[in-house]
Length: 204
Image (tube, rainbow, N blue to C red; front, top):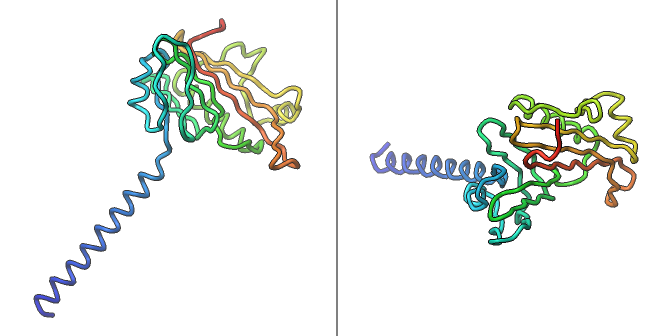
């Protein structure tokens, strides 16, 4: 093999390796879900700077809300009580005096089958439990579980389910699951999860 041929061969290998690395980097970047990363009570602009999903600025002197400009997941960025949701299509971030006041969202991009809804709900509860959140008002609003009794209750359009959790005296989350009439799939049982996050608004 001549020196020139050897150099061309090595250059060709290098080009292939670089192309593979660039492709891999692009895949990794594209696979990262857009997220809204926030802490309740922090400056709204800090949330915007931390988040990879685009969201409008707060309106000075007003209490209002904004919606991310794309599907996005929530990353609750508290160092002790943090958790992450799946991608959400319905997602509002409320603010007062340019500080994050609350979040209301459905951690899904379409109405879910019951099995899939339970996976999301149970994963969120596991994250909360592992991070030190505690269920409250459990006798009246027990935590969700994948049991025959819970499945019967969730299938009842007049019942559904609700659970409340506290993170110390700092935060509260409420999660609801209800049957949802999906006009795109009228013959299927579909479910909607609703999540509300703020400072505590009920007593344990």
